[in-house]
Image (cartoon, rainbow, N blue to C red):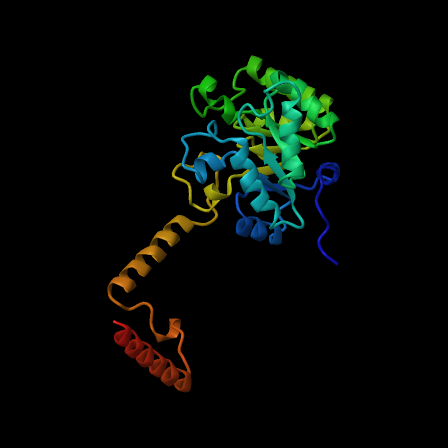
Length: 291
């Protein structure tokens, strides 16, 4: 018997029985396969790939083609986890049914099982349309990276009573239009607790404190592969240093002719080697006669 497949409704069951939800990002097949084997509940193909994979300054340049490409790679490696794809900048605000079509492409072309859409009241109409079309939607409030130009940087949100109230109201509106979960990013933990207690759907925190129903982090951050890590990130492994050391060792051994050795090389059997030598000699003689 294989592991039970996680679905959007599974997350609701987990909240109802007070079981914490785990989510990490992945952008390629081997990473997704390993996270799936580790039984991570949700794998997010985040538009954060712009920062950690493609080298952009932020998520704004990431487009549908790039997101579909990486989502397809991820879904090929997953059997157990719920795969959620980020709707990139403006993909849900193009009007005339394009939000549904873009979300549908993730399901039909990339075999994702849900999409994540940033924004609150300003995004309710396209979110509701996507939900009504039969596609599960995860919301995203607080620090929404696609509004980084408006925010003026990666700043904590909801620090004043008015802004905290707006985030709570938006969370309730998202629940009303049918999202199955909502990500809360970079808000005070007290606000994260209030929203989690008020919502019937699960909350997934990233810099929103320990009271959320689940937690999500960017994989490259927890592995020490990112150039900058926010305060809310815990580094579980320093693979960045390990990678550099491995590369340096390779560099040194090749330069000193210490790699490869016979151990890392293929050998012909003695009889076949003799035949090869004779064949080469015969070929060379024939070429010389032609010349």
